[in-house]
Length: 362
Image (cartoon, rainbow, N blue to C red; front, side, top):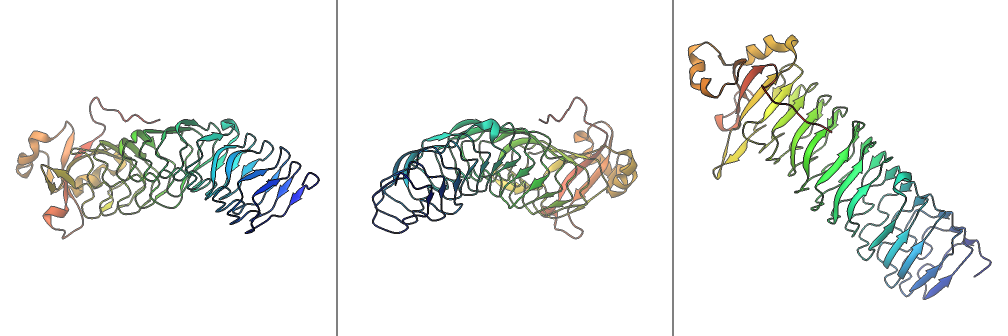
């Protein structure tokens, strides 16, 4: 069809091959469920492709596809095909589910500096691999189960999408700047079992369920957070440093299974505590954790002192003296009133910063 510029489609037909070398527009569902098509050629003039399942379930479609003028990648375009290579060098926006489940694609061509948004599910269960760099990306989503990705550099990200790296078992590092203000959905980094490092989310106010659970990060800055879903930092056994500021409530199992002796830096007042906030697993059994609260704002020092059940210099403090850092005020229980002893953690309350310790954030 050499004269056609608008291609409306051959949806769910027996067509086996299409050649539209001058196509400028390809409509929604153009080849939806066209199961016998093996080849489609559109030349290099296409500037608009419908954002819904253009080649969805074209199970025999193979080959390499290049759209040099397209400024976005449509949603679910190649889902259910056997396409092996895609090229969108002018794209700035990769839409949600663009390549979801496209496990046969082994070559993705983009211009990393142009990409500003990656939608949820964009690269779910694909073979996209290696160390990815998106220096101007503002919205980061879509790498769940993308197990061949090892790192992502995205210093300007403002929004992290739903399940962005959910169970991406190969990722070891996600380099974010200080621009993140919004977390969408939930389980964004859940079970990224190789993810390490120090993360600054100091501009984020709300964290969802399972946000970074079961990772191997070591330090978190959460100084603007006012809302936490239960277990959003559950099972980070490597977590040794946390900074908190605006939080007034720490819910059940917030830092469940964090490192024994975790240092928690408070810039705000005494919050309320749920059950098992810091509970840990040691010597094959669940036990209350011993943590250290460093009070970084003298304005709230009196309130923290009043929260202690044993104060330094009193007889009831003696059993705890051996573990007490310098400038310890006293000891407090971490948990709701009336909670059973095995649902409360023990915290040493310390005035100021720990000697010789710094939280490294990127």
